Length: 144
Image (tube, rainbow, N blue to C red; front, side, top):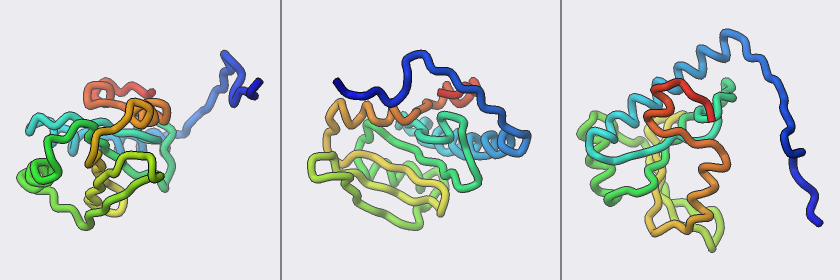
């Protein structure tokens, strides 16, 4: 039988100082701003990772994922119409079996990624497993 990563029902209390809470607010404000701009073009998105979970650090970045993009052209046009111009464009693939994704780097700490091909449900599930938050969740100040 496989060994479990964590015991079922395991609880751990973590206390953050005021600096950490301010950083979380700042990074979430950046995410909300960009996600609202995408939302105006009917492009739903999520933020994932430490910003969604709330366990940010000084090295945290803001990772936005557009899980159902209309097309890369429309996505980039929406960003440019909102005054956002990527500094770099990348095509990435985690493994040969995983979906190819596009990444638009807005700055050194902010990026928007999106699938260029249909994703399998297990790939989409990785974002949920790692912590994802939609615009409403961020507005409500919830951590996942």
